[in-house]
Image (tube, rainbow, N blue to C red; front, side, top):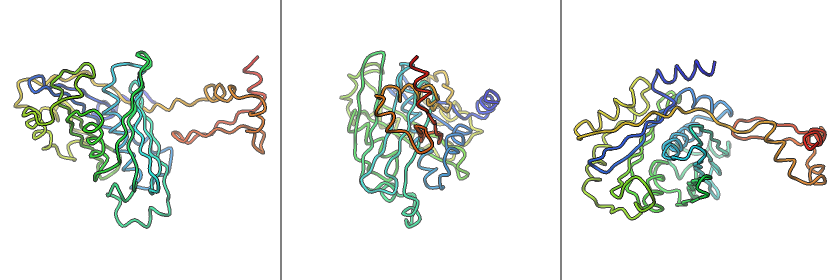
Length: 308
């Protein structure tokens, strides 16, 4: 069944990330569109429409940023956390084409908000943290910026402008049904795609202004149109350029990494007394995974057996 769903998703031009470069303009980017994968992640919780929409945008943004990673075991985590917002935690991560995400929010306060499209109305005062973990290189770096602007896309642009000083354009869209979401990220890298030396990119470069002007013509309906191939979308935007190099598409799947063996291995690291204190009235250590809404009951006998 999973294979059939993936084949159908690819045929409909969804659940994939496509990288591209425009060599003459020193620009690179990603386009992403999610479909059945989006439904699979959202189905773990009964999210009301405004919360589902903001999580959908965050998942697209995570796929855009995560698909830039060249290290297969590298992980990209996007986290928005607030002090007193209706949404107090939003977290998504990406690793090797696998996506997952979760939102924690106050249902009662959500119903009192007159508009759900205002970022501040949902989050209040908070911050956006984007973390790159690169195990092979033994590197981890994180950028944190205030959660400001009218959308998550604006907050992401602020991250690149403040934390990396890379001119970037981000657009995110969710269709009216809530079942398809898409996005585009394009960046100006006059110092080349490799290495961190690009941090000091000039923000007023004329090549970037040209590319940005073209990218800004994209419509939300194009990003979320499951019948529109991503390659065709890029051609519509940049067909006047000398060359657009499309990279191999990256298929995207749901990737919650929780399972009984992993949970048991984590609990086994605690001392016996701590383990006994964790046992509930049913005789189990119950561990919740918020990403997939599953509970893993671990008994002391399971832990004892695993240590033999």
